[in-house]
Length: 312
Image (cartoon, rainbow, N blue to C red; front, side, top):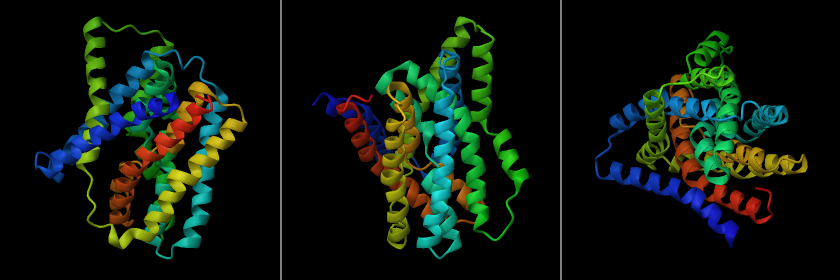
């Protein structure tokens, strides 16, 4: 029963924040335009500050296990390769293939990784998740571009990939946090307080805005690709990779970080990228919506099971 309440206490606050956001959208306090504007500020200001603070204030960089990084990178690459096979076998329309493939491997690790890791195992897990963000976010960006351009009849644009990586504020925040931590940079108290306040805004506001973005209007035309992609993303891949991680001896903090990496829903930015690169943006939007809602249940079950068997 204790494992049940640990799981519940971890995911229920995130779900309630999404409910608050959905209510603000229904009542007209948030519009589609304002939601996009606030979301842009979150991902360009508040989340980068949160990532920086977690790396800067943690000693996880010093004891970051290479095995964890290698497993995470290898796991994402395997997801990508398996996803190619799945979409080729199950979908005929190229505009949908790229979106489905992106949805299968690209998780919202930035948004979910830090709060869930913190709720499970405290600041040590949050710091390690933040460091891993610096590794997997560039990988996600590269593979997302490849996934969408692979099925639009064009050769992948490597220059576009590099620009996307070099201009990503989360990458800069991660690099700056690692540098400040490594060189022992000390900020004045007012600066520390300001950074902490800005970082503290990120998680609750991001989940409220995510809830305000929920729109179920295009579900009917996307049922089959939705079922295929979400089954792979939320059930098959998390079960497979966490099972392998357990067999390889990952426990505690490392396992919590891997849980959020492979168990998180599809990244919100996948919708924007699909719009910009000729993918089925309506399908991409529905994948983000349903994975965000359903992942509350799947993450709860993963945490419950791992806590019940004392792996976390």
